[in-house]
Length: 336
Ligand SMILES: [Zn+2]
Image 1 (cartoon, rainbow, N blue to C red):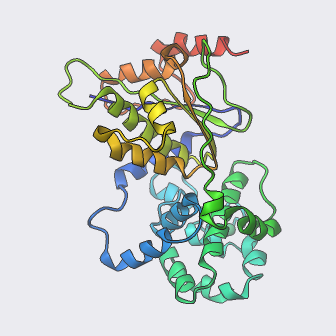
Image 2 (image 1 turned 90 degrees about the vertical axis):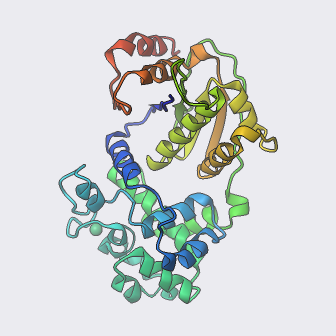
C-alpha cells in the first residue's frame, strides 16, 4: 500500500483550493492514452517537437485538450458557479477566450500580421488554432511561447498578483522562452543541508515536501524507494497544476534524491519512474532538490503513515488533520 503526500508551504497568498480541486477532477478524467484519436497524433507530434521549453509545449497541449482550468471548465466541474471572464466581464472564459478572443488581448494579437487576428477569432478551439499556425508555419514557437506567457499573466491577474503588462508579453516570450536549449534551465541542486527541523523556502519559492509509506500487511511488491518516487511524481504534478515555477522538492529518501541529482546513473528497478520525475522537473524554471532527515520532514512523513486509514484519498486544504496539529505546530515553532 502506498500513498502520496503533498505538503505545500507558501509565503504568498495563493489559495490552493481551486487548483487542487481541479487537479483532482482532472485526474479522474485522465490524460491521453491509447484511445487517443489518431487524427490528432500529427498535431501532438508537432507540438512536442517545438523548440521551446517543455512547460510551453505542455501548456499548448493542455490548451488543445481543453484541460486548462478556465472559468468554463471550473463551472463544468462544479468548482465555481460563474464562467464570466474576469478581465472583460462580458464573455464566458474558455481557453480560446482566455488566450485569444478576450477583447483585452486585441492590442497584442493585432501586432503580428502573420498570426492573422481575424482567423484566430474564427477558431473555436486550440486544435483549430494550432492547425492554422502550423499550416502556415506562422512562427509556431513564438506563438506557443506567447500563449504560455498569457496564461501565466492571466493566472496572476486572477490571483491579484503583479502581472506582466500586455505590451511586454511578446518581448518576454521572445527573450525568455525561445529555444529549449537555453531556456530549459538545468535544475540546481543544493544537497544535504544539515538542519534539525523543517525550514521555509526562499522568498517567492514553494517547498514541496513529499513522503511515501509502506505497510507490513501490504501485498504490493514495490520497494520503499519506488513508493517514494511515486509520491514525488504526484507532488510534482500537483505543483505544476498550481502553476508553481520556483520549487524545492524535499524528501527524506536519500537514495532517491541522490539518484535524481546524479542524472546519469540508472536504477534498473525504477528507471522509468525516475525518467518521469526528471521530465516533470524540466517543466519548472527553477528547481532545487533537497534531502533532509526524517525529523525535518515530519509532517509529510506523518501524513504518509496516515494513508492506512480509509478513505484512500484524503485532502486537507489550509487546515490539517487534528491528530497531526502538534507536528505542524512544532514545525512552525522551529522557524526562525
Ligand atoms: Zn474576456
